[in-house]
Image 1 (cartoon, rainbow, N blue to C red):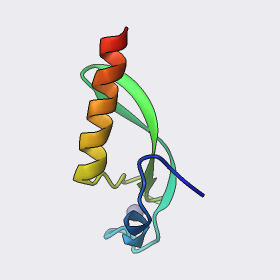
Image 2 (cartoon, helix red, strand yellow; image 1 turned 90 degrees about the horizontal axis):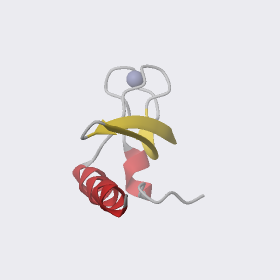
Image 3 (cartoon, rainbow, N blue to C red; image 1 turned 90 degrees about the vertical axis):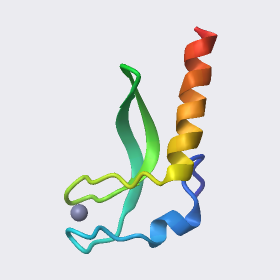
Image 4 (cartoon, rainbow, N blue to C red; image 1 turned 120 degrees about the vertical axis):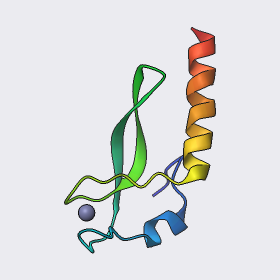
Amino acid sequence: MKYDNVQPEDLNWRCERCDCDLVVGPVAATYMNNRFSTDLPYCPTCKTVLIVERVAMGKMAEVEQILEDK
Ligand SMILES: [Zn+2]
């Protein structure tokens, strides 16, 4: 099981609200008016997405690259 944006330690997190384990799956996000989906850890109960700074920074750079290529 390997995800580009998810490190094993990310899955050590639990949802603070529901106290349930996070799962990894495609999550819709919006950045600079562009919608994209990426695999991120999220809570299956309340849909809270865990976005750690490393993922956010990496994803933003990736999206910007995609936009520049258009
Ligand atoms: Zn939750």
